[in-house]
Length: 488
Image (tube, rainbow, N blue to C red):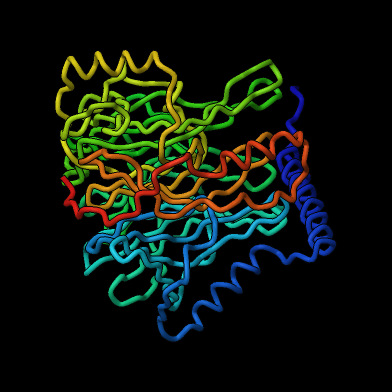
């Protein structure tokens, strides 16, 4: 007779895993008691309960810009010439603060309004938001994460929220069969559908990346998992997700961690996919998209990786899937009154600039069909590329900048500035008229960088760099009124 299988083997493994989980939970409980922190699940439940007790919506004008933050959602208002900020986080090397405030910036009056409405979502960062003019204007938010002050505990959300911009009221939308909890995903609005792709979930012990694609119908309020044919993109977060021509979606780049034997290494994706939607994505097409900044990991040795940050502004032609530099009129001496045309890059990708890592940037679609660049412009651009690049106005190199386009004007807010092992959170803001391309305008000046309270393994020489590159490059600070432009 053959050897009998041990029927209790699987049950024993389950018991062992349960014991391990219990030990880790007890260990975490003791640690939280030592640092004076409550369980993160209880904290979130208490916040939701407090928000529900709010009876009426209130608005107040802020005396100045919002507090510095990153991983915030920046969304174009669907009907007004305004921008909508929600959430975000701030970290000073020692503690983390996560926000759930809703802020509205009026570009014409240059004022910030804080809106507090009943039943607001709990604090989060790394979420995604879209706005629709339906029902007199709605803001939809999905997912994100909450981090305890000591970064001991992490919680990823899988909730969906709707904010009525006219009634000033939040609604937590209950819809089964949606995406699991995650942050670092990408979300776009296509006609009557919200589309969610990718992201990651990290509970502090393990990290999982996703490559699933979901649609949420605004009419029926139902989720659907999209099963596409062909080779699917690998799991990733921080990628680009763009509605494009011919009823398609474009997915590009992203970041993930992959197993290499027993070790784990970071991986930056540089591939691009086009998904055909069969009518599902009609009505969302724009022919241009814009990207600012970002970071790519560069291997210096087998054990050392250096992050390379850029301040490049690039345009992606959504028909040809080709990248182009965006050149300012002020970048060229003797420029005539016509805006300079973006200069095409060879090939379909530009890995040294456009590769992205997790939560590097947020992209919003622009308008306007690209015109063919003249031979003289291409020749001049190549000539100037050989010359030392002058220090120009606008945001400095950074990652995780929030971006939005409203009425043909591109807005860039904040982001992260790396100095050795330090990551400083920026709170500056700039605008660029995409029709005129006549230079960046400063909306919020970057104040002095905040003190860093984390472990300081960098030399004192870094402090001098921090003073000279604390957010903006030397600029003309053109803060005059901007022309009102309609989206192409």
